[in-house]
Length: 447
Ligand code: PLP
Image 1 (spheres, rainbow, N blue to C red):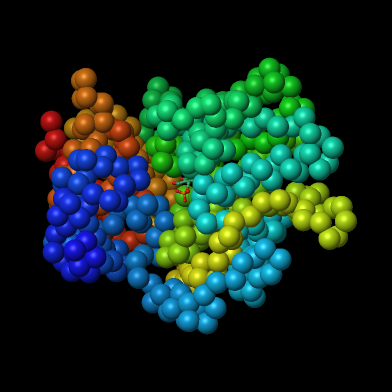
Image 2 (cartoon, rainbow, N blue to C red):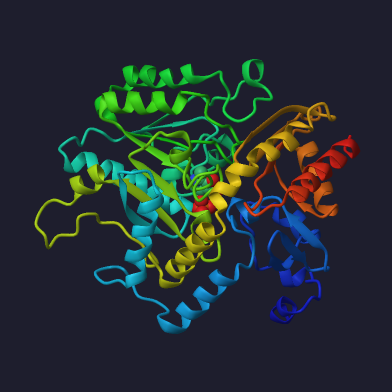
C-alpha cells in the first residue's frame, strides 16, 4: 500500500513511512510530522495537503532557474527515449563533450577541462584525489596535506568530511584523513556584524595559511580548499582581499587552490561562478547542484590546463587518472545540464541575480532590530540571519522560526539558530518581500 499512497494525495501512514531512512533528518520526529511535496512549479512547491509553499531555498540551494522548467523537462524526456545510458569508461556520447565545452566557456579563463561526477560530495573527493595525483605525477609525492577552514562544508564523502570544518558532521565517523589542517573561519561579530556583501574586515585571516605552512612545511601541502562563500555553514562572504591573499600564498608555495562552488556555481552570486564574481581564479572548481538546475543529479570538477596537462603524461594507452563513476557524464544529466545552461543564458539569470542582489540585501538587512537577531549577512541571492540561542536550548529558536515560516507558506532552512535563505534566481521583488515578511512574523511569534 506504500506505492498506492505515493501516487495519491492520501497522507502516508506511519507504517508506510518506516522503510525510508531520510538523510540529514530527525527521522522519528519527521515521521510523526511529515512534510511531503507532490508538485513544484516556478517559485513554488505544492505540499501534499495542497498548500503552495514559496521556495526560499531553491530546493537545497540548487533549483536556480525555478521548478519545472519546460525546456529541461523535455530535454530529459527526449534523451531518456534516445540513449538512456552509456558509460564514459573508454566510450561516451556527444552531449558529454558539448557540455564540458559549454562549462569551460563560462568558467574563468584557464579552467578548461571538466571531470563529471554525480554530486557535490563526489566532486570534492575527486578534486582532492586530482590534487594528490597532480603532485605525485610531477614528482612531488610529499604533497599530501590539505588545508581547509573552520565551518566549511565539503560534502559527505571521506575526503570531504576530512576537510569539513563542522564538528557535528565529523564527530561520529573518525578516523578521518589525518593529513588535514584548518584555517579559522572569517566570521567576527565584533568587527563585521551586519556587513552587507563582502566584509571589509578579515583579509588578514588569510595570512594564517602562512602560519600553518610554517608548521607543516609547504612541501607537504597538496591543496587549499575553501568555499569562496561559506554556504551551509552560515553564508560567510569572503572579506575583501581574502581570496586574493589565499591565491598569492598558494602560488608562492606551489600549492593548488580549490574553490568548492557547489552552492556558489551557476549564478548564485551573480556570475557563472564566485571565482568570476570575485576575480580570483583557483586551479580547480568543484560544482554540482545548479549544474542541471537539480533536475538530474550531476557534479563536475573543472581544472586548469596546468593540472590537466600534468596528468596527461605517460604512454598513450594508459589510463591517466584511475578514477571515475558508473554515472559520470550520464546522458540524462548531460541533457538536463545543457538545457539548464540554455535556460540560464536565455533568461539572463546570472545577470538577473546580480541586478536584484541589492534589493535582496536591503530586504534582508531591513530585519535588523527584529527580536533575537544578532547578525545578518548576504551576498548575491544568499542570506543568513543569526538568532541568539535560547538559554540551554541551542537550535530551538531557529527550528521554531523555520517551522513557523513553513506554516506561513514559506520554505527557508534553519541550521542551528541560523536561518538560511537561497531562493531561485527567478524570484520576483514581491516574493523577496514576502519571504522576509514571513521571517519577521516568525521572529515576533517565537519566544
Ligand atoms: N560542497 C558544498 C560547498 C556544498 O554546499 C555541498 C552541499 O550542500 C556539497 C559539497 C555536497 O554536495 P552533495 O550534497 O551534492 O553531495
